[in-house]
Image (cartoon, rainbow over all chains, first blue to last red; front, top):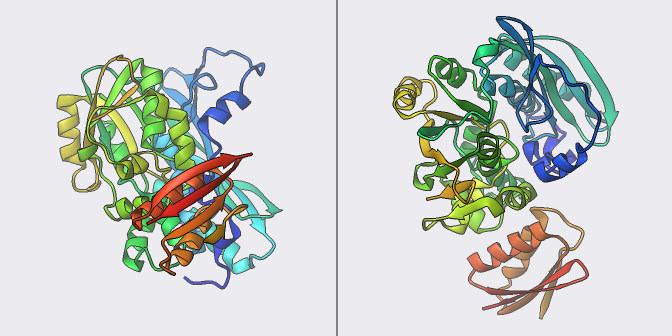
Amino acid sequence: METEVRLTKLASCAGCGAKVGAGTLCQLLEGFQTHTDPNLIVGYDRSDDASVYVVSEHQAIVQTTDFFPPIVDDPFLFGQIAAANAISDVYAMGGEPKLALNLMCVADSMDDVTVREILRGGYSKAYEAGVIISGGHTIHGAEPIYGLAVTGFVDPTKVLTNAGARPGDVLILTKKLGVGILTTAGKADIGLVSEDLMQRLQLQMATLNKAARDVMVKYPVHGCTDVTGFSLMGHSYEMAQGSGCTLHIQTDRVPFHPEATEMAEMGFIPAGAYRNREYAGRNVCVAGNVTRAMQDILYDPQTSGGLLISVPREAGERMLEEMHNEVPDAAMIGYVTEKEDADIVLE
Amino acid sequence: MERVDARGLSCPEPVILTRKALLGGAKEYEVLVDNVTSRENVTRFAEHAGYTVTVTEAGGEYTLSLKK
């Protein structure tokens, strides 16, 4: 649906590109007093997607939140994408999302129809995920913002974190990269991104990681995270650090939208990509012939990106086969070794 | 030499301004930016358009000299 307000024009940065850099975040959180609780099995101390609190032998609560300014002009799609992105953190922990609260900021220039469309988008994705939106909080502000605080459940013995990767694992990525670069190029409004491509990007961003998660949990997965604002490289770096391993990324296997290459060469790269490079780049060894444009794609912040899964090779191959129908972009993109000098090796 | 002042702008505006200027087809340009993202993006754009880029920094601002 077209509305008069162009949502992306109201935002100074788009989608997950608005995320504060991971390095900055670590500094901001340093030194605060917090309670320790043995039931909090994933929390503050690791840079993970959500916190996990054990409530009984078989049940733990997964809690997370995510929100951002519009990445697309269509308010319904923006709502869908923001909701899919917020819910994804629960999937990345291997959990099942259950409850959610709306988090919303309404700019003065937005009419009621636009606001309602954003919410309708959010509710539609929540419904698809089996999530009940049970309330929320809406404020007025300079820029539109939408997202969810999501609560889910997981068996405490089956929690997946980004710290579980082990040598011998393979890495599987379930969505294509390049979303940040292409939406930045689209924002330039000079006809660089076709309508058809924009629709494919929007559809990908609005796709829940539910199908990937539902297949993943059937296999002996060691570690998982979702690839969002910190890019494949940033999230791989956190996985490598958390797991005490080195991640080898076979760049010729990484799924990405091919149109992103030329847009990267033309300099349509979001600021977040450079922040990501600063955060993770020092610990990266470029072993193969990896072009600058490909590296830019690897550092590109993704909005509602796919899952990055670390799983033993044999199980990974079977998992990929099972994912094939419902998650067609899923690909094996690398492998895990004992800790080497670099945290990530690009091959 | 034509000058593009893209200070105070965020991505992708500096690239769009540079692109507009380069349509003029001159052999040399000077582009002013004030952040790393713009420096990197304008450099990529100019190189893609066949220019060589030299960067000088002063007080947090960057002057990009484009030559063909």
